[in-house]
Length: 270
Image (cartoon, rainbow, N blue to C red; front, top):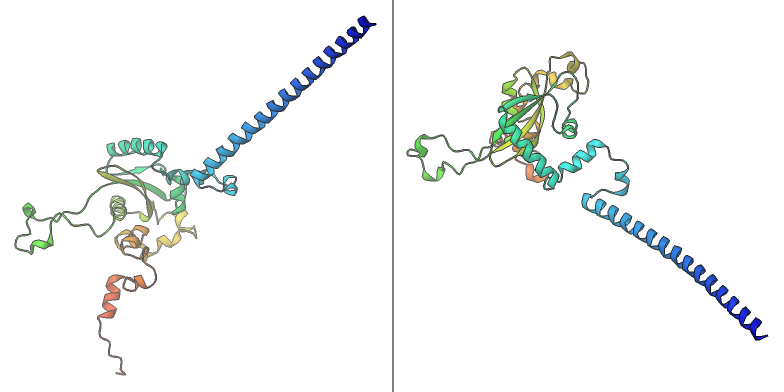
């Protein structure tokens, strides 16, 4: 009796012990495995997208609707990143080896050029211009004003127009049969600034037949860059940054406004 009792007792004891042991072992093993797997998966997934959208300032909806040009635009907004610093440094080295004004087969910043009106078809041309940085020293002999008031200065002067406007002027002088459409910045170093200017052949049939660009073929659009009609020209004339009552003396132009305010008009029947 005792023999069968101990036999059944140890039998059922070991049976239940191993049964529950393996059962709880596999249960907790799979439970913790799946738990940590999904935990780490969602953890890295969440923080990856969080830092990506936080540092790039891109919404969830934009991430699925952004095209290639939009990615290029966002990349150029972060010029202090390692990628852009290296890329701009290498490009500036290349640009320094070229001529001051040189024609390029395609725009360096395709997204920016297209936003400014460039089309990859006949009649459009891209010129890269190198402009020396710094102010404008007064062109007097030996740095002397020769009798003029000393507070006129020689070296502390600034040119009235911006560098991009000067780049447009030099590109138009290089290609007198083309007309300036717009321009944009592509890089700079300690000595130079580099711009690309979009020029249009107003006599080309492709341009004259396109209703979106044939306005540039009008006679009044000759030498737009010399009369402050381009985007850079409007900037240095104060027509972009100034709005409202701040621009009361800037429109339609500074000289026209001054002339209107200083002209005596006696209205009478003659």
